[in-house]
Image 1: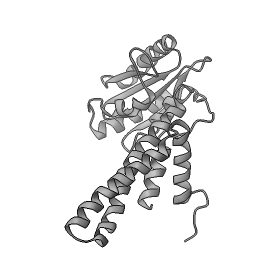
Image 2: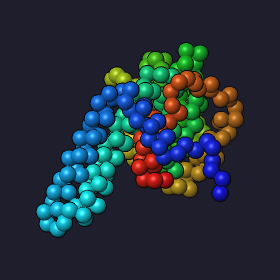
Image 3: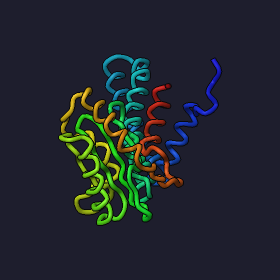
Length: 232
């Protein structure tokens, strides 16, 4: 089977994730080394004392890698979010981390000042996420909420402002905030909502979601780190 040239190898994945993380977290190397040594030595000492040094080595190494991998993944994720926060389109990138069962459509509405509304459809109903100037975004969200309400009747519609400040949800917490909303719809009802929304989308142009040096997915570094360490 031919190797996909666009799919990076495990070593490259680790390097990419580590490079991104080190830019925001210069001490990451020493932190990971310390966690590995402490965890591995603790298991090695206990097993060697109770049994033998050979099984102690065999168990100590993976016991050190496991917590190291967990910490690396979390710090890589945090660093990736820090890289996109404050940039246009950051909310769309964060919403892109939502998994199966969520329909994410970036840029359903926008202004010339790069105020943008993204839409998520799932079990909670419809979630409209705005990013940009808070006062302008609130007006844009209100307009979009009325447009969607005319199409979906009694389906719950939530509005969220992504960013920093009062009543806003930080980019790094955005996907978690959406997934924690109440489950109001059954899967069949979600499908029905998607079909009705298509008529609304067909009547307007797609927003030009800003593009730039930010990663398309804020969790990419963490995902690459986990996959590389798992040997995928």
